[in-house]
Image (cartoon, rainbow, N blue to C red; front, side, top):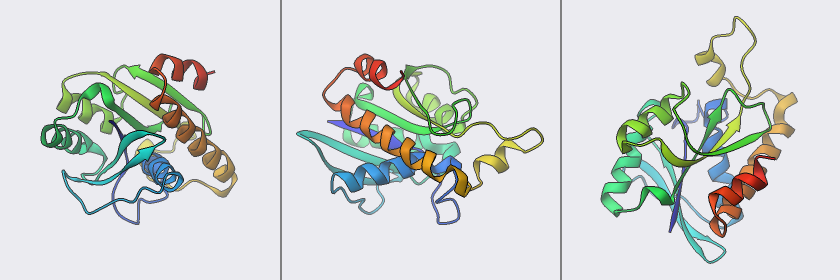
Length: 186
């Protein structure tokens, strides 16, 4: 069984913000495969279903970004799942809008959601799909930028990036992460 954690902030005021592309991707993946999110458990909204013949669990932490690791740890402890079956999807300032970057280890790179997951799991080794949101213009505070909505001119780039991230997650179900990175990081 694979479990995919999409990072974001709960609540309608954050729904369309750059920081919530992880939630957006999970919503798109859920829609593709007829998966619905049930009531909150383990500090997260959870949707269970199948991608092809692979059982998958989609997880949206409801802890706010900075505490995402609490939901990951709660899910791990309750369901006794393996960390090597987890994939985390999140926004990345260092990747250009519309692009995705896959990695299987590394530091938090200043991302508080990833920092929290590393703290609560005790490792930097887990599969990731980083979704590009680009850096703000000079003088624009990063915190304000990540909590702002995507402008209309980026709508098509955002939609294509979400589709591409869904394709990568689906491909990873039947291939190694190295094969997935080779295909989708090109």
